[in-house]
Length: 222
Ligand code: GRF
Image (tube, rainbow, N blue to C red; front, side, top):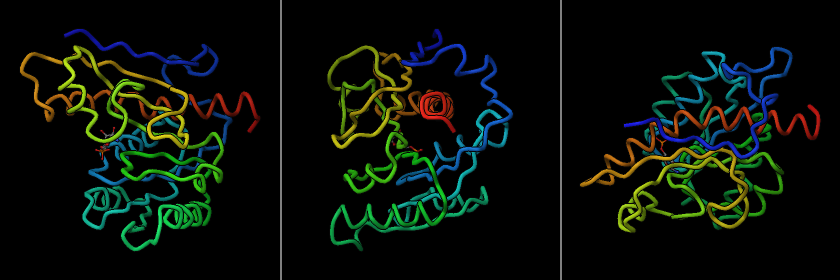
């Protein structure tokens, strides 16, 4: 199988060095990660930081589900973690207000939704303008929302993939940063397809964070 196509919407030669090394003079990005599931994307972001591919540090991993595997992963990786169980909040806005307070307390400047399965509110969006990214397992705008992999399989499309995008209020909307395409194979299952999509998620997420940060710095200054 050939390598999937990676489309970068605003990459310019000056934004990404050929080996994706960050500019040595820039300050590390301070990331607040939000996760609900296994946390494989959290782990690849941590690895990209450790290997020098991404000039950043993880300030905190916030998770909303007490049994989420991401908690063990964060522990193993030595990352600060915080459970904010959505069931204990009266509303989506109340949860987001607590998230904002925790992110600020941990001095996060960027919010990275790495498998965050909650609908966000204006409270979170307003607290981090242009600095919230999400990853979604389809080629948006196709198949937004839950069960994106199953939706793609059922629809009969032959190519799906994953998208990293800025977060806006509408679910899985917002300007696209990078997409990677993944072919759907005959007799594919949603598990097998999701696994291949995740391989691509792990490639593009650290790169998308670097691209967004460099674009932000170029436009707004550090
Ligand atoms: C990913 O497929 C992501 O696109 C979706 O949730 C999944 C999270 O995976 N939003 P993981 O927890 O990072 O392994």
